[in-house]
Image 1 (cartoon, rainbow, N blue to C red):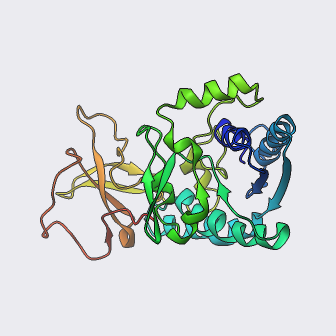
Image 2 (cartoon, one colour; image 1 turned 135 degrees about the horizontal axis):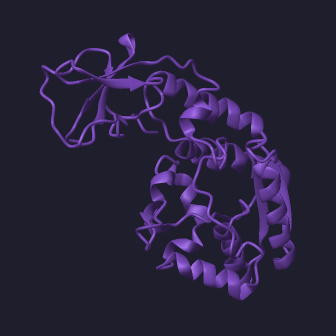
Length: 283
């Protein structure tokens, strides 16, 4: 359980089915946010309150070191190379369906099933279990689970994946009187905070060196504040032009970005140079 409405309703649904449910809170980050409070501690308090309401046991497992070594350090390294990793995808594969599974077995003994609040589904196909998208395509989170070893899905359930709309989750939470029923969704990455820009956060860990943004013809269009501040396909943020410019390549060796006005343009091989970062390597 994360302290949000999704995982709270997941626990509620399982408890309503008469199952023996225990909650696991995974602490991955301990740094204070902009308000001087650790978001993990705030979320854990909400988990404890929901567990009290549902009358289920609550366990906290500290994986801060594992998250730093496996997810955060890798994320910084990828950004320093001009690429754009997805920490949540890596966290699911390495931490939630990796280290956490082992910790549960060690601390709590063998377990039968694992449940999360992801909007995804699993479908058994003979001896294998396939990962499917959630019914609510706008909330589908199967992408974030796509890198997880499929062997884990045979004993995993996603109760929210079969709900048609997000509002059903809110209604279930309100009807059950859960304290997280009206809690706002957390859309950002846990280590950044809710009110900070991601590029400003990365600047605390990576060298920030300004450079040129050029057209594919070599004309200087503007400046960037660091190669990690823009990703491929993102608006270049150049003022003074009627149409937007979009980043399509990064020349890491010369600290330059290249932009075009058509986001979907196809580039001839004559435009491409060795060492350029052209696509996002997403885990």
